[in-house]
Image (cartoon, rainbow, N blue to C red):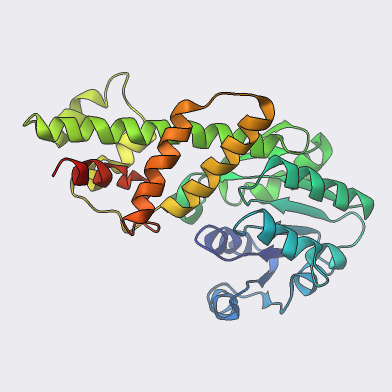
Length: 291
């Protein structure tokens, strides 16, 4: 058993922390909305802390999964932030999707306190978190990666060290760039099939066995056909993530025309009131335009 802290009990963090507790670890949780932390403790045991600092005290590993760069800085670097409570040798593992810059900034701050950090964004969505089947892409050093591996394995089916601090976040950007284009392509294909008088489900049954197959196709085509989007990875989150990708691309002088276009389409979905809809709701935008 190890003493762990988990900060941020959102859609992803809540079940991830639960897997750590189920593995027998002593987990102290902090969440900005205290009621969520109380609910988690009632379900999984462990303890609730009133501040990130309190959660991190005497913890060998501190996990974070919050909203964005500013949220992460607040729970790590603030007066009651986790880093104030972390002792020498502790490891911060951040699962938030952030910029590579903030990952490097926090890694340096941890090093100043003789602590270590892994930037460790995840892919797999809510279902992956609930089922303990996430993919984790990490930035940091080999020794910290090996030290953290048994804990990451509590909720991951795959993990890989991608390079130094920031490399995990850069890899997650590649992930989001690819997903954005795939979802738009799938939306256009299904919309075209419908307007051409084809049975969309029959179409997918055929083409999913060929080169067009993807996770998005396998897991989202039915709900897209049925116009159901009240679940999954929210449009608001994807807009944030694609913005991070585009900012990094500007710094690196990389052209991402499709990513820029898809971000614009997602902002149109937000304007339709779909900020909390699943990212597959891009097809609803096409349907509205064709009416």
